[in-house]
Length: 126
Image 1 (cartoon, helix red, strand yellow):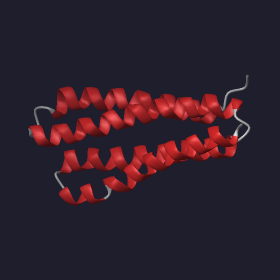
Image 2: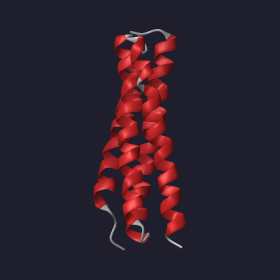
Image 3: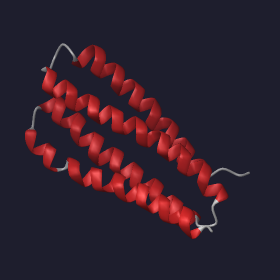
Image 4: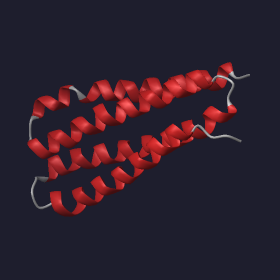
């Protein structure tokens, strides 16, 4: 089975970064920000990690589903969600700029669309 390597690579790097950011939040950031902003940062890390694993799944599924275009679209949406959702939460926690919270739902919609698109890929493969 040939795996769709770009998403496996991107997912692996995203997972690596989620671990690094999680460690940063637990150690370096803990002493610099309040509990509320630390919780915001950790939410970004959680969703970042979940969707990094989702990207790896997309890479594996893209090889076995005849609807690989839908599967790849799901992967790109997951990546967009990581950047927009988690990225905005990271920046909010680091800068305290609350307006960044207005951007976060766009990333959340990308996550929802990614999982819906992956479901479409599975349904269309039958």
